[in-house]
Length: 248
Image 1 (cartoon, rainbow, N blue to C red):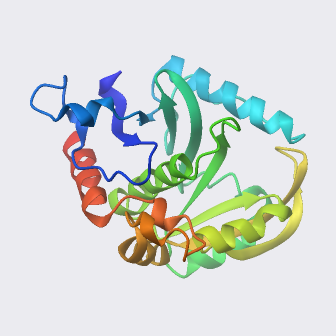
Image 2 (cartoon, helix red, strand yellow):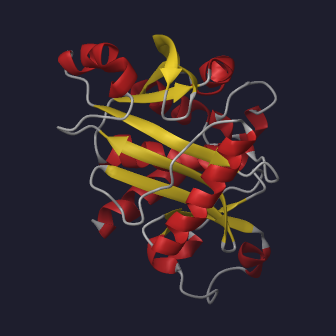
């Protein structure tokens, strides 16, 4: 469904996005190799079918780790946006952005005092929740693309300053090394998933700096233990930002 497709991305990180091909209704006028390359698409999951598929993936991946979870609402809700990565029509990754509002964030349930420190300092905060990746695909390219588009929505389009996530303690080091998160709250029991959680925070200014230095540069993958070389380049990001702003 082209209407909610944000971008088509080659699985092969060695190929940059030379054209934002999802803006084209058909391959006319574009090199044949652009369409022979296998792509996955990043979409806003605003249809019941895509939301249902994303929920199935979330439930399956959380269950394999012994976590409890609830399905996504059947209809989009205010101040929350779900993104899905799809290979053909199969959802292979999903993430939900929660924008701070008068009703707060999900992570306020455990960490309101810590989050209010940021709010009181004038920082606009958001959260990423319900991250799930198909274990068969297990692609850093897909994960990086989802994070980058979510970052674009939250920071470049909406103007939020800080990202918050709750992760299992055993995953803390991964997010610190791969994306630059920092521990912002101690380990507590997250009853939504019946598992321990740690609050992590990422200053979007750090992400923006890393994208400027490493984004779209797969030749740096071996020398930088980071997800940022798998992100889009600054020019590619600008194209996505422009498209989303034109959509309104």
